[in-house]
Length: 212
Ligand code: CDP
Image 1: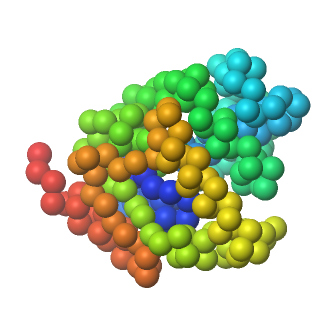
Image 2: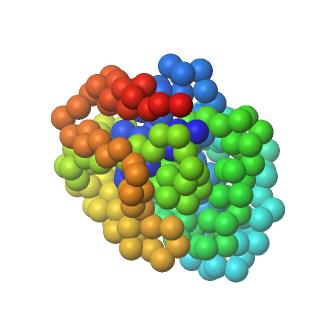
């Protein structure tokens, strides 16, 4: 099991996907699962901050995240889960302890069925797979992360992206349930000024350096 955690725009998704490809391991984007629950809530007119109905929804919603395709209740929501509305709603859904318990259980099932893989998120090395063989925590300056994300999205300019990232950083790091933080035994890589290939090489180096 390889756990890759970090804040928005740290390069997690691209790095995790590339490492998984190189090692021919299955890959899971857990952020997409939290986004899928937020999407399902919005579609049903449920307030994402309303804990009980969102928890009930998380327990029963059918969702899959496979090869970049996010399916919610049998519907392809890959585009919608990356949109503005879901991005605004996702942090309150992710702060809901019952939602986290449900999704963590699903993530562990996913890994058990595949005998491991590369899993990325916010709490993978700390909570979901504390025994992961390698834990990586990616960071980068707020400006670098905002620039990267601003290049990816079309519906927001740099200032709006930077504000959104600062807002989510704050919510994700200060929430009571499984806040964003590096595991004590994680390898921390500051990706400011580094290209994807350099970060991937650093991760593979650390993996190669492990014994057993
Ligand atoms: O890609 P980006 O960093 O924008 O976000 P993401 O990885 O898709 O995650 C979206 C949100 O889900 C984060 O802001 C967290 O609130 C939440 N999340 C979480 O709480 N725990 C995880 N393991 C993954 C995501």
